Length: 135
Image (cartoon, rainbow, N blue to C red; front, side):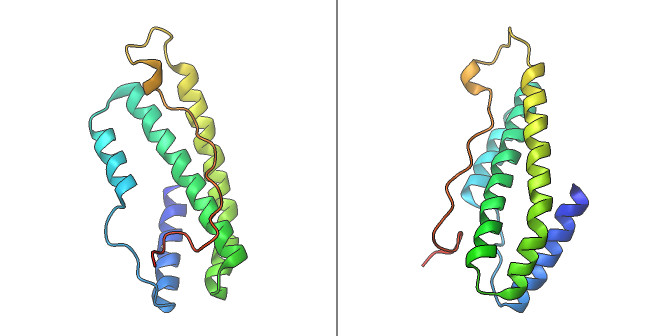
């Protein structure tokens, strides 16, 4: 998975540079919030929260790639999105399976309230405009 992410990031960076699309230089607010949350957790609750974040992030990535494939205006980026989508869908499935396994291993008499144990969220809706761009 790390190799897939590294390859995708390098390819996307190259495509973005060629298309003169600026890339973010820091974490977005959701990513910063997740980092702060994870820093305060440990053990099974950390594992569950981390994997919930992975499911959400991969769901968001699927939506972004699907948008780019159908609505994008840069042919090389559309081709990259088409080639990358199956890999991301595979990662999403792995993340969902691992999250389910971790949730199943959680002891019934957990010290964490049930509301703090994350579940796999539903996929967010597909955006109508290019996601991530502010006007």
